[in-house]
Length: 419
Ligand code: EPU
Image (tube, rainbow, N blue to C red; front, top):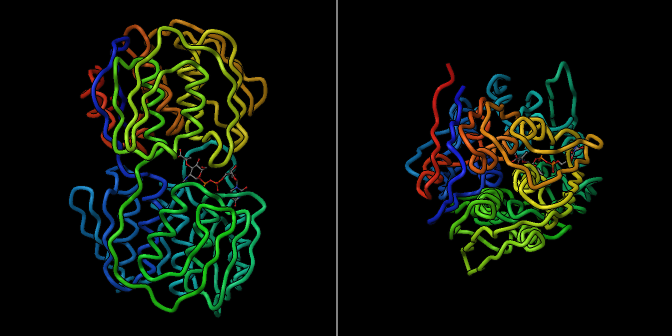
C-alpha cells in the first residue's frame, strides 16, 4: 500500500491538464472485445483500474499494446474463460466483461465485481436486462453463469438510471437480433463516449445522452480509432481544490458543459470563475459561503464529487447540508475530516451537516475509497502542517499523475510506500 504525504496551507498556481475519463475508459476497454479486429483507444488514463482491465484482457488472450496514452487491443483470438475472482474483484468495471463476453460468445461466467465500498451496489438491473434480451442467469456462490441461445432485441425499462446497467446492456445488445430500446437510461458523458466508440466500430446506436437509447443490432464490428472523453470528475476535483487554494489555477483540456452542476454550486459558494471553450480559470475567494448539495444522476450534482466538495465546505461560513441520494455509505471521509478539525455530523447514512469555517490541521488519516481519498487530499492541502493519507492506492485508482499534477502547481505532496 502507498501513503500520500502533504505539507499544506500554501497557495497553488499554474495549469492542470485533465486526463481521459476513468469511468469512460473502464467501459471502452472491455467494449473492445466485441470487435474481431484491432481497435485503438487514445487518451487512456494511466491508472490502476486500467492496469487491472489490461490484466483481464491478456488473461483472455487478447493482444494489448500500450504506449503513453494509446491502447491497441486485438481481441480476435480471445477465449471465453472464467476470469479469476482475484482479478475481477480488483474493480467494479470488470462487470462490463459480462455484457461484452455474453454478446461475443453467448455465454459468460463471472464473479460479482469489486469496487469501492460505498454501498450495497447490486447488479440486479444488469442481470434483469440480460434476461430481457433472452439470456438465462444462474447464480452459485457469487458466481454468475449467463447463457443465451441467441440475444434478441427488446424494450428494457431501467428502474433506476444506472450507469453500469446502461453500458452493459448496450454492450449486450449491440449484436443482438433486431432492435433494443433502453428507457430511463443513464445520460452521463461516458454513456455517449461508449456509444460513439461502438458506432465507430459499425454499431447502430442512437439517443445516447438522452433517457432513451435505441440499438439496432449489427452482425459484425470493425476496427476503429477512438478517443476517451476528458474526465469530468477529475476536472471537478481540481476545480474544488482551486476554489480553496487557487491563486490563479487554469484547468485545461476539459468540457465545461460536463461540470455545469458544479459550476453552479461554486457560484453559490462565491467562487469567481472564467470559463473558456475548453478551460476554466479559478482564483479562490477570500471567503466562501455555505450551501446545500443533493447528489443526482447526470446532469445533476455528481455523487463522485460530493466527497471532494465536503472538504471545501469545511472552509465555508455557515451550515451546509449534503444529501447523498445515490449510495448508502458515501460519507466515510467525514470521520477523517473531523480528525483534522472539521465540524461535520451525519444526520442519517445519507445526510450530513458541515459547519464552517474550521481550521484544519495535518493528521494521519485513511482513504476508505477513491473519492474519500480525493477529499482528504484537498483537506491536506488546506490544512496547516503534515497530513499523511494511508491506503492511498484508492486514490491512484482514479487520478492519473495526481502527485505530479499537484507538484506542478506548487503543492508539497509526495507518494511513499507504507511501512
Ligand atoms: N444500482 C442497483 N442495481 C443495479 C445497478 C445499480 O440498485 O443493477 C444502484 C447502485 O447500488 C447505486 C446506484 O444504483 O446505489 C447507482 O449505480 P450505477 O449503476 O449508476 O453506478 P455504477 O455503474 O456502479 C458508476 C461509476 C461510479 C459512479 C456511478 C454513478 C464506474 C466503474 N463506476 O458506478 O464511479 O459513482 O456510476 O455515476 O463507472 C467513482 O468513480 O468513484 C465511482 C464510484
